[in-house]
Length: 303
Image (cartoon, rainbow, N blue to C red; front, side, top):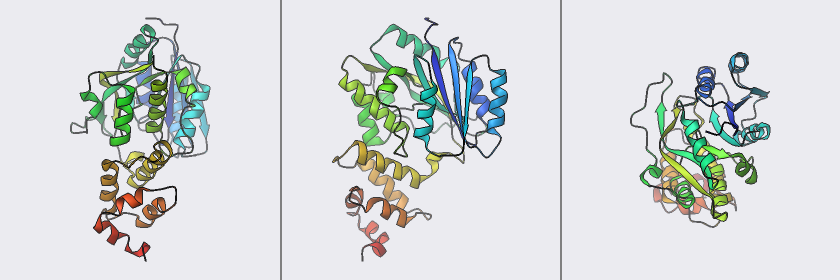
């Protein structure tokens, strides 16, 4: 292994006091020497920052801590981490998740041995709950069924299924992340947009390709405070994604079904959905109105 190649671990923390120690120590357990750890705490209200400070004192690797008032802008926060990263390679994680032991060295080996590999990711995750119990029935990724997924496969699954792989645990060439200008700070979505930007970059640069390992690289934590559990936020985020990155493309069935199901939830914010889709920049509502029952839910807005 070429130990001269440095990897930057970009870690984002917000109210992760119960999990952040496990996350950082999972980096220490990667059996790789040339590591830097950069942690941004986005104004946590718990004692996450104090725990991170203690971990810095114990860390066998250089560790940089950034603290700030809460912004809630995941893309901007990851871009701030990227700006501090000095590694040849870069990986991202939220501090409620953690790396599976020795998942990173294998990916670095692949990148070291083939300059045409833009990044290495996993087609599986290990979903866990707050107590580290594995969630056995967690949905599997469709990408796992493809033998050697291409950048086009990734784009297709992100568009049609709103998911292809998890950026957590993936190892990217830092110069490619820089070339696509990292995350999109103007959108709520973070991971799906980075994946899309990098996949399109690979398609334009025909020598490049992704490498997908058919195994799990992270323990993905599911708990009551997951941002992804906020359905309205996720609907808004994907609406932004489609309208900015897939202009004039017909919205896929999966997204329509997702919004339809949300409209029938007891806590559905009808007004928020209407305001999201009513403007001239959003065409989704017109594609949803064909469902008669949804028309009834919106009847107060269509007088």
